[in-house]
View 1 (tube, helix red, strand yellow):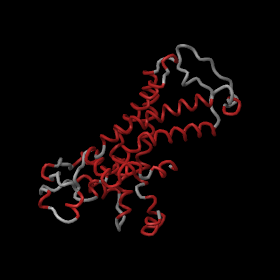
View 2: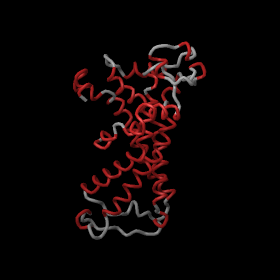
View 3: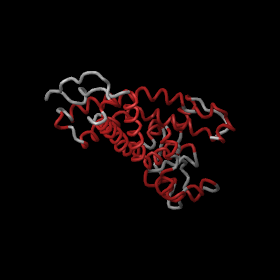
View 4: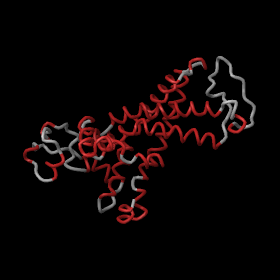
Length: 267
């Protein structure tokens, strides 16, 4: 934070925020809409409301939302990454830069300097996957899908479970609003009929859900971000999941997969 503030001031802490705002509306809207629709199919009656079905509903909702909004996520991460450079980058210019990125055709043996130092000797750039055009906006999509399964799944599962705990009769007088509870029939889901929690209780349930889901998916989050900024570092070689994981392990060991988790908890 000191480095960012020294280079760009407070504005540097908000790089990529415009892309975040563009992304968050469709992402959140699609995720919660998809969750309610998918949940109504997977959990048609209260008797079917099991942790596994909750997990599956949340995971499918997360995958649906990330599929439609992933290009905006890549743009957001790249704009934030530009804090390492000396000049500010506009949204249009970063889109153009991502679109036209591709690895060089020359083999690794012809490379020297920092390029040769950043890639394992077993990798030949001539055989690396060509990544140019719209496919560049889906860099890191595969680990995102893998990470979204535990992230969204655990998020919704933990939230629903936490709200169930907060509705326990022993603490209900402190956590529940004083409105009458509507009757639940076998034809209606208890999810939409349950009594409303107080604001602080909803906030607590959401915070616990975020804590658990962030922890469950964070290693894949680190791999995803490393793949997303691949075109902005080194020579633009498009790494696969395994290559990215091996590079992180080689640099910092197992701790490298948890870098920044404390900031994630605060967020």
